[in-house]
Image (cartoon, rainbow, N blue to C red; front, side, top):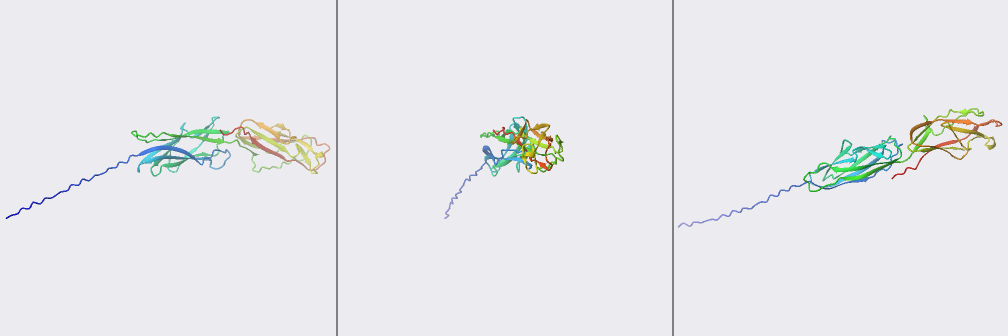
Length: 294
């Protein structure tokens, strides 16, 4: 007798779910912030850059392999800040990994490096009238997808550099600040024009200040005031009254370099004893300080 066994075989079909994750590139903000900025530009600064301003560009980015490009520029597409007198203060862009494109600076931001520090470097040796120099800094994305559901607005920041009023004076062609002028043998009405010219620079209106130790007199070596010999100074052919403690000569306008001659005119020496006569004449310059930063 045959017994037939029927064996039921169960085949288990286990469905597997395959999960596909498509990570979209997302950026939700773009900002610019000032860092360690120098607000003043000194026209007499001798370093490579008289001022350096740093700005941090940052964004919130999601997406491991995503990269967004941002352009940093001034609103007028130039590389100069503008003064009220139509003068311009030039600068250079700098950032370690960025690229200069037609006065603009291109940077790349990613999820792992969502920020960058960009510098505006202002080279020295720019002669500028005292005042404020301004511009509007603008940073915007250049490769945001057209179908992006998030609108990332450009970020702007006002930039202001103040050029303070400064002036300097020295003897033309000489390094030292002190100069001993030998007047030679004195006689009445003698004119001495052998003094070196003064060299003046000022980026604002200015005043020349002269102060005589003996109020416009040459003092005898005995230090007795009764033997004083009066003298005058012709400053750029104009006679200066040295009887006051300080004599001011005002000049309107600026100068990047002006040479001014000085002459000494000896007064009456009759009945004066022989000997050595001398005086100390201090000459200084003061810029007009009416200009103030905004």
